[in-house]
Length: 307
Image (cartoon, rainbow, N blue to C red):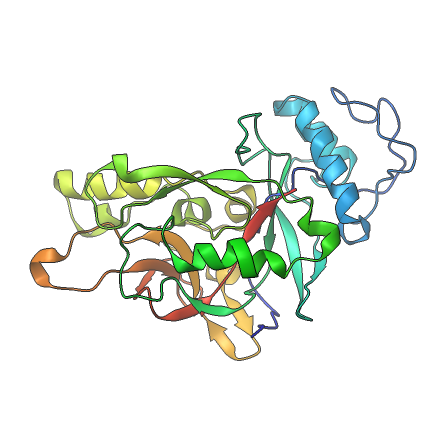
């Protein structure tokens, strides 16, 4: 079942606490936040426990956003001095025996489902956790919300998390076209998710895929739908991922060879007149950021979550 990753990006994890660093965090080490307990010291990301990362995430949230939250993230080594994400990973030992790297994808990026504001940290897996279809049936109807992959992540996927992490995962809101084939941004609605696949917009930034091939109102409508599915995560932006490039950051080298991985974004164009099948977007096996695949085909599952 598992895929042993050696290169590439994978799904995101939102950890409502962040960590990292090298020195004692005392009262005043995190401007705008409550004093860190004496035992919570700055150290490399992989040396934090999941509980410590959750505590750091809450401190980032308590700082109120902006420069104050960024300072807390710097204090704990999540961000470098220049505000970029520190190039660190943390191992995630899953209950099926698979051990996979994770990294911080963003700070104060995802909105918590309870309406209390953004989560301090979002993490992402650095590789796929399985090869699965988006849907058992050959349809994009209902989009991400109705997909069998979303249901799998909510049950079997979460069951792969160790006990010291599973109870810390924070539900967040994800915006997705939950209709499938559509011509309107009204189809983009919120779901509550603990584990999720990324949208194309969250990975690539502002999308112009339809404008590049077509023109007029049709192309604008299609791009608007895709661009309503969230905002690009800091890690992808800093890794140089764009709608037309970023292969080095996006390619997954698994034990079975290079493989494509799923976005949660359905292909919105209505092919009814041409009797073509429904599709979801993927990152190609080469790492190119745009491709289409039938929902019932298999691809790597890269997911994110918050703590």
